[in-house]
Length: 251
Length: 151
Ligand code: SF4
Ligand code: FES
Ligand code: FES
Image (cartoon, rainbow over all chains, first blue to last red; front, side, top):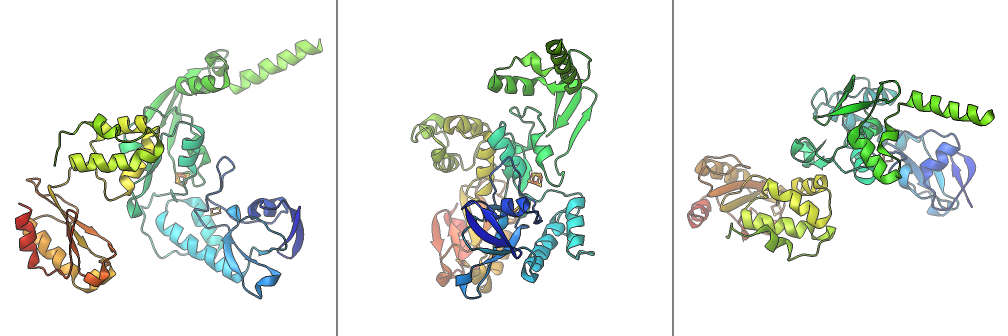
């Protein structure tokens, strides 16, 4: 265990633990965009900037990204200095210029005093901040159906050649992990459409409510050893099943 | 430049691993003057890299393209030093002479015109690169020579 200071408070942490994790544990709020529990911190969005210094730095300080900066003994962390606030504001100014379509970014920008953004470079509907969460979630945890393609101003998240992907299993992990809800999907009745591909949702074997695409169930089954059919029971019916099991035990 | 190079011949030059990806893409690009889309899946399987990441790499580096490039690729450096030394004039002249815009390929497939940013030879600015050959202190009139030798 080591000790460091966050916003004037002495706190304990493991050496090397990331500042963001410590701050959250201590109830200190630091804004983040590209941080997601499912993937390693990547330091992509720079929203989590904080100012750090040490007693032996003779007044020197530097800005670091809290999400991936390792804690060390006697570090002094300040999360809301003028420098920090100004930096976050500048980042938001650029982000909002890129993503005029994102409500979240607009709200965050307002919090930092950017009521009337002046610059717009993205399409008005654009929401993606290119944080890379979705692509890394898909690459690392699912099938790697999407990636960031092109570069510079043309960079975007998409499937290879923007064509229908044959490895996508329609799990929605990308859409659900996106901080700005930039990935569109549609679910109507027994159909789910994402990345241009429509998946049939298998109806619940008990009540007929939509469950998962067959592709997703097969992918899961291969990894968990559970039977594919076991995935075709909706959450409600599964809960009911469990309840019945316990009832029987209780008897 | 051989265009009939077999994909397998290229692949077998390199071990079946992720680290081979860029080398393989370079060789395919050199052999075909572009990356034929249908080869990307095979490359993905060979290197064990998901197709989506192969396309991410292939679209990131300007050395690769999915559209066939001309027999001669003319690159005009538009980096700061070259810009100051009149790269814009060279670009305008090249576009006029070839009848295409930067980034395009002539209809007969002979020339591709591209702009690049600093190529690290600022002392020789302005720079024009014809295929792999660098020409420094370039003047718009020098284009005639380049366009002829490219024929
Ligand atoms: S779609 Fe969402 S998760 Fe993916 S890069 Fe864009 S903002 Fe991040
Ligand atoms: S959350 Fe730390 S850089 Fe994005
Ligand atoms: S700017 Fe052209 S070589 Fe550096």
